[in-house]
Amino acid sequence: MVVNQQRFGCVSWSGQGVLTFIEETLRGQISADLLVNVILETFEILNMQSAILVQDHTKVHSFHVVEDTKYLLNLRSLEGYLSNSPDLDLIESIWRECKDRVLKGLSGNLEELVDYAFEERNNIDIEFIRSCLASMPQRLYEIISNNGRYINIRDNINNESNYIKHNV
Image (cartoon, rainbow, N blue to C red; front, side, top):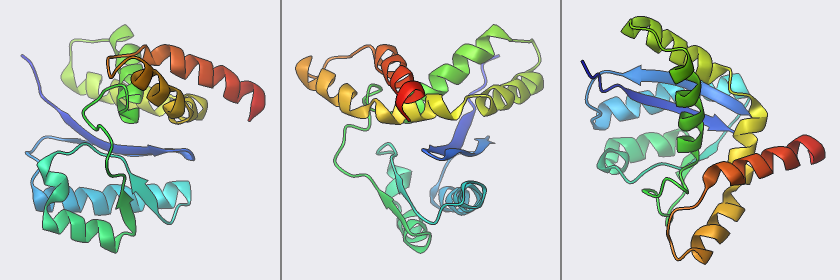
């Protein structure tokens, strides 16, 4: 049985925010409610007051109720980037790391798998998150140099991780 489970969460330079699994179809009000619950709790956990969202261009993100909620929460969205490019999607690098870790500890029980996924996601250290964020300039340069074709993201992240460990 294949289970399509959506995730809603956030990360920042300060660390990981809240992560929640969603079993229903994301619609405008549900998405707005998630923003309120997840972002406000993340702000509290990470001692933040505002954020710039990097999100895909899924239609639900542009619904009026979602835009109004972002305004009320003092959130801005990064505009004009290639959101469908996995090479430029920071959260995909973090999900890939989480997936690699979870696959090493797979069990047959879906509930245990979800619990294990949360645990492994929480075990991703701040240096890895920061290296994902810090690798963006190099990613952009390589994508431009490669005429928009895919690049080796792991090399960018590993290089930035080594830099951060020795210089930050």
